[in-house]
Image (tube, rainbow, N blue to C red; front, side, top):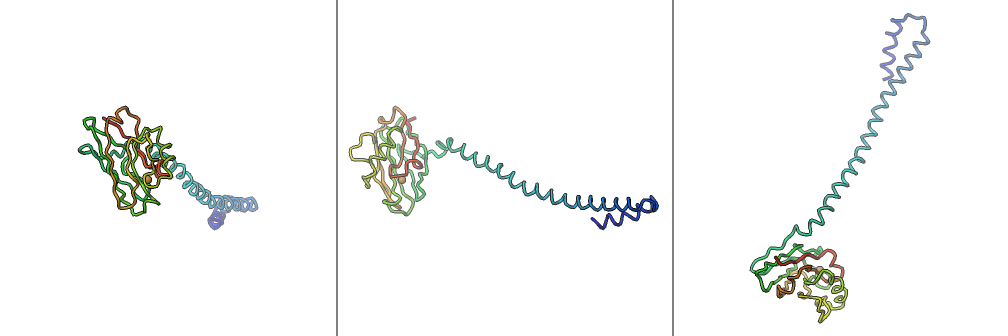
Length: 207
Ligand code: CU
């Protein structure tokens, strides 16, 4: 850029003769300076380029927020497959069921839930069960059942409408219950293994 300014100065000399050489030199310096100013402009534009990723970061936040908004809707995005008044729910080593909603046909008098543990972890580490109860009773059932490792439901707990035993990786269990017991609505199926309730629950309703 400085070279450009110097190259321009002879033209300026020619145009204005020699009388104000110092002024022209000053102009050349000014050109050189402004050229430097221009050359620093790309550096400035590089700064916005750096800022661009930052602008993408806020953009990424809404993207993360979208799944978060989808989460409530996810309350019914994995309906269990129901056939012949029964369903099979899978559970895994990641503390998950593969279903978040069970719709029991109103034509069924009894309904069976088969639980499979498709993981490999032991029942005392990543055990799972399925308990059917009123939503308001879930936490109490899980808390009171903590010391009963085989079922994680306190013996004789009337709040449990039905529940399987606790199983580990590779195991299965099932439970059958009268559909009439959940016809009034507001029921959930969940795992009462300590700490699993938050992630492992879904709605169960008669329709
Ligand atoms: Cu569990």
